[in-house]
Length: 345
Ligand code: ATP
Ligand code: MG
Image (cartoon, rainbow, N blue to C red; front, side):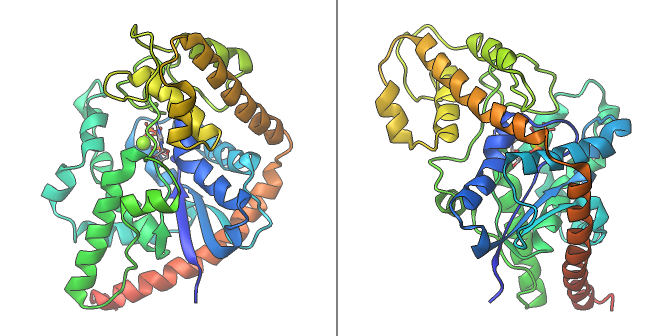
């Protein structure tokens, strides 16, 4: 029996923030810490082709991709484990070809319903920045997943709709060709159960708790970067927007700023929602809560930053080359099956 595939990618259009860590990286670290890595094949990749969907500094893209991959290693992803594959999407060309094929099995109306696209285009100053790539990138994401028969896709809440789209597309394709060509990834709620998450994470901006923390929005005071110093972390969290209710509760509706801080605390300390609620509910001093969050974030990021110093470019690049050879074989095999079924071969 082949091992179930766990797959996740984080765009390389910029450096990572705390939301990326909690939504995309932490679940993989949990598997490794719980000694479960050997039960799965873990594909953690740099989706560098996704970087173009929002304005990106192309001079830095190649270096940023390597820096981001090094960060995974600094976080605790082992490169010498045969079950772990770090790779760059653009080095495996089957991703692009499958995307084109799947684009022709996706209706324009279906793509138009993606709320992430609508959210993103509102950030742009000019219509010229809105590309077809941004519109259709969920199809590339579906190809990223379906090429490797992945079951578990640890992502943040912002990717719920895209994962559901991927499932629908795969089911439709299988039905159309009367073959189980694609493995259907688990549905979003099942994924949260498997990840033992009390909800899918959507870490908010510290300054605008109605919006998610994001890489492509200029919001330096609301975004904790994984490279932030202890002082920057303390400053940002101390000035995080809260409310004047003077009573702590986990309530996204009425206390989004406070709830955001509580959720960060819960994820970083692997606490259940009920533990966190029990510890903090009704307390009136917000500075105590902020202090606890500062300590947790500083401890987490200090450790990563220290480890990063000893991650070598050469070791990471060697791993990438090795795994990209291996995954090109797997991906090309899958692509050939699809080419046959749709009449190209
Ligand atoms: P961008 O704004 O450029 O799209 P991003 O911050 O959304 O950047 P992505 O690279 O698109 O980052 O997403 C990488 C992973 O991080 C995905 O799994 C996504 O769900 C997760 N993620 C992104 N932002 C958050 C957040 N605020 N809270 C939790 N998870 C998040
Ligand atoms: Mg995003």
